[in-house]
Length: 264
Ligand SMILES: C[S@@+](CC[C@H](N)C(=O)[O-])C[C@H]1O[C@@H](n2cnc3c(N)ncnc32)[C@H](O)[C@@H]1O
Image (cartoon, rainbow, N blue to C red):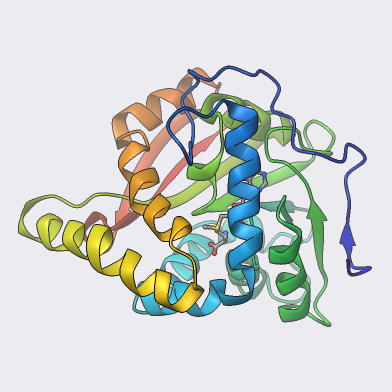
């Protein structure tokens, strides 16, 4: 535990409803929400030391471009001195740092939140000396007041929530009346590129990931969780159902990734 990481008052992961049928991540098909969230937290805690290296190797460094592009897309908020920005499921903080670079000195105050303590410790180390705040928190039960943030981002994290609807409603709750949301995640490109990509994502990536991380689970889970994630139209409907308006999806890099965005 480092001093810089603030802990929430409620200590453990506790999804609001324990409904195994809810649309959300499952590490094992039979898991209920609580077990799924616990397994996700364990998984990211276990790979934290190698997470950054693996990310850059497996994405051929394109991840840096995706974070930068997403942060730049929201610079109208990030550059405002009066704005508060939350990077949810921040992991080791790369999206958070991309937001900070866009904000510059005198920009928004930026908070990164995640429930895997070892990931936050890495984020704290990487951001030493920068005015970023790190909070250990469950995305489904955040320790933040309603209406606190002008922008909530989540990069490659939202897909891992055990209940997508509950996650969207919680993001909606912590946003200001005109707040905006940006959810960056993997997509599934179509056509020939899609075939090549699926081969890489389902065969090559788990093999390399297992060798570098020393464990096979997370890199088998990754393609399975992307396949299970709602397709763009369904995700946009979920966002609307949770109360977001002007929702839209911008694919990146031929649809390998993309950002869902909308307003409260
Ligand atoms: C794939 S990593 C992404 C990290 C970072 N945003 C990035 O772009 O590299 C997913 C992160 O989501 C976090 N996460 C998953 N479910 C969460 C939850 N319910 N509450 C908070 N964090 C969660 C994990 O701990 C992990 O750090």
